[in-house]
Length: 193
Image (tube, rainbow, N blue to C red; front, side, top):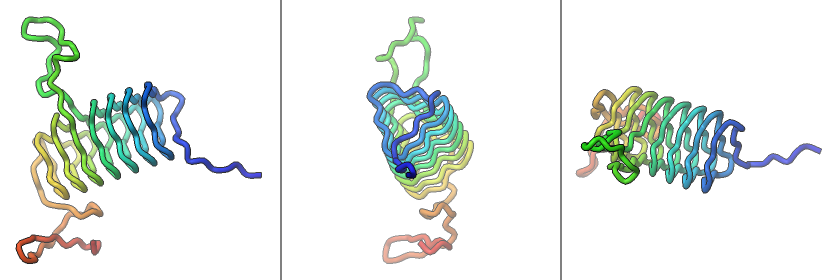
């Protein structure tokens, strides 16, 4: 008799999953990933090798986080987001190891901010996201970008610092044709969406 297929999460034996982490059905967490306490990961996600997700982060359904990405605490990543390899979410607006008097900084000394990634957005490999930034739904961040300010929905941004270079469709293609309906400008993609 064939085995009944289950949709339980898969966690590689070398991954470190701390207490109070919730992992949705069908999610796969690969080699040497570290998921900190209080994090919630949705269904059917892929967490690549050596990914670090800090405490109290929220990961939606169908999210793909590629190898060696670093997601610092309290990040919010909505459904269907793609995060490329070696992407780094930073979390401290004024990073210092010590206070002005030379004493080591303690947990309460940091000025941390949440990063929020909207549904369907994609972040290219080796990009750096600064604290407090919001990336809109279906936005596309080019590889190697440094995101210093909010990115609008459907925006195409890249560079250091990243700048608005156009807009993309839900399919990810750059929108080449625009038309106006009443007071609204609408983009038309070759995919037909």
